[in-house]
Image (tube, rainbow, N blue to C red; front, side, top):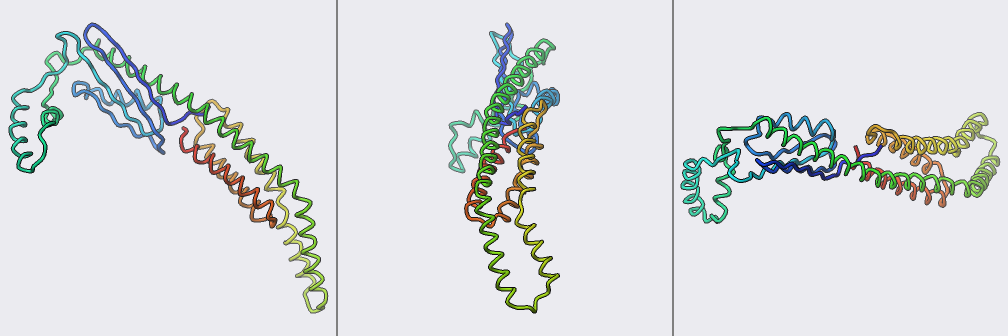
Length: 290
């Protein structure tokens, strides 16, 4: 199964006490990088929240936001009015002396640690269960989003591999012409050498065998087809296979490069350029999957 690292998920939970909304956004990354924004009251649960998210998402640059709306007179936090006034009184003259705007100064003060503090009743187990429910819904939603995006990427990969195999088949239509060109070239070189009896015949035979072997790229074609088949098989695996697919694509690239270096034929080299282009498209999209 292919999963994208790009995704979005939201989970909500409501009760008579509060409405909870959890949001997750993710982009591609080599590692798991989680940025958490949660109310101060739930900071003691941050590690639990991180574990809930990391267990499912595994990799990617992830942003998580937890927001809570309190209903009626219910609230889980309160403003330390005295502290807020003290900060405001100090910051306003400072901002004016530096000729900085003071329009959003109150919002800045409210973001200062301890200005908004937990109320005395703190977080009850019922509150946490509600928050946990919203987080789990968000995690499930983003995972489904990633699966859906992965299905789209799978089609892109399948199309790219199919195009590479089609281009590989096209090289075979030029094999006859390539072979004749090589024969003519060797005959010409032989005729030039045979006019001079001073050459080392044993060394000449060794060089000729090496040259003929170097011309042959049948093994590269067999290995490239094998790598392409293995790539498609890996797409169908249930576990996340991004790294494995990346390794296979590197092996495909090696065979394509070797084929191009051995081709010694303008038409085949042109086809090889097309194969490289298809492979680069695949590699670019591989960066986006788990």
